[in-house]
Amino acid sequence: MRIIGITGGIGSGKTTVAKLFALLGIPVYSADDAAKEIMVKDPLLVQQIKDHFGREAYFDDGTLNRSFLSNIVFNDKDQLAALNELVHPATIRDSEEWARRQQAPYVIKEAALMFETESFHHVDKVIMVYAPQALRIHRVMQRDGVDRNAVLARMHKQIDEKIKLKLADYVVYNDEQQMVIPQVLSLHKQFLAFS
View 1 (cartoon, helix red, strand yellow):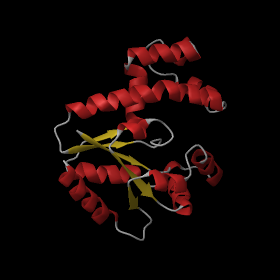
View 2 (spheres, rainbow, N blue to C red; view 1 turned 120 degrees about the vertical axis):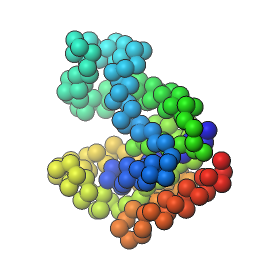
View 3 (cartoon, rainbow, N blue to C red; view 1 turned 30 degrees about the horizontal axis):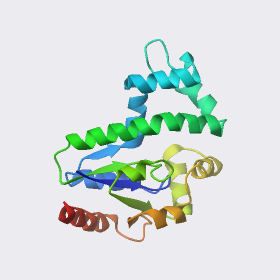
């Protein structure tokens, strides 16, 4: 099964591009959504998180104590790295198992941190969704109701867009200058030819 990764900076529109592939009948795995689920359902990961961050990381009913964990990791980059070192491998394993179960010519794995983690080693090709920084900031401010500084703080946790552009195999320009659907259709046609 060929796995195509989709990534892009916050506000680039990677989720929108992934949804276009889904409309074409291609299964899409959202690493961000899956990670939230895995942090509750994967017994090994749950135990690893408890061992590292304490039993307070989970409520008695087994749900994740997000505010407790957020207070630790967002104020300490080493603790954030430790959490990522636990969650990312579990998400990669889950995505590979998911891909094996799919009946399609190829699948899409959408991940915000494709290059920041080892995820890019576990896909066959990577699509980078690109939008200029000013547009991305505007989109996230509108979408999340946050100020410019909050968006910039999130952006600084991701690899620079120029580096991602060099690492990616394909680029979809979501800059409100070029139409996205024809770009996705063109890639879809190429990926079908590979299958």
